[in-house]
Length: 65
Image 1 (cartoon, rainbow, N blue to C red):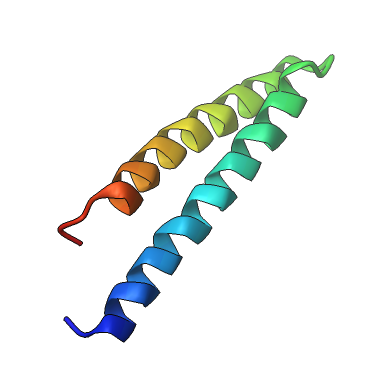
Image 2: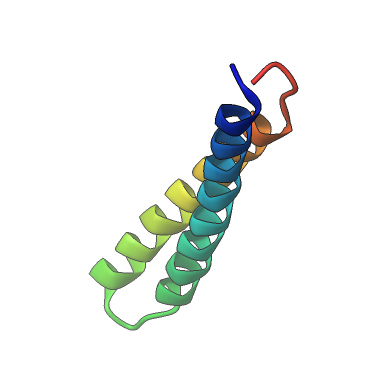
């Protein structure tokens, strides 16, 4: 893989880390809502955000990619 491909993949992983972090923050903001369905959806969004943040953070930190 050339240098441009390496940089583009690392940039993609970094952008995904940031977007999953924002998704986690939005989900955590929804958890405190009065409606139970909104709170449940917020919990699900926060969970997906945490999992995605960890997943893409690990991929971003790997040196083989």
